[in-house]
Image 1 (cartoon, rainbow, N blue to C red):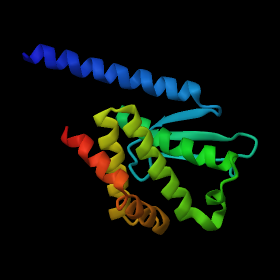
Image 2 (spheres, one colour; image 1 turned 135 degrees about the horizontal axis):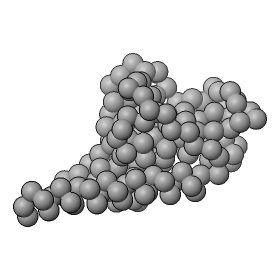
Image 3 (cartoon, rainbow, N blue to C red; image 1 turned 180 degrees about the vertical axis):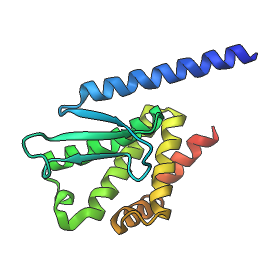
Length: 159
């Protein structure tokens, strides 16, 4: 494969991820707002409490489409769990809410079968396990890293 072929392949992969992101946004039953940012503190935000009449997901885009997809998958879990009245969305269960979002986001990434998205999900979870973002994020990330699902995701990167 010459250099041109590899560049074309990369462009196709990027276009496919952009289409996937657009489809995920279209399929979302609440508004998704994408903001360009350099702030890597958090990838996105879902809130019904802060915006009861304007429930939405906000994605802080770093011009990395895989990051945007992973952030959207994560926030969609929070949205879905709140609508299903999952006990994890109770304010006192923040660690459980993050655990569900990391775990189900990783499951979704594996289901999509895209190595870049799986890798970005792994990086998100590893980063949260190592950072002092919040105790609930760190604890939830460490729990996910002990699951068989985590090993399955790591094997994806080896193939």
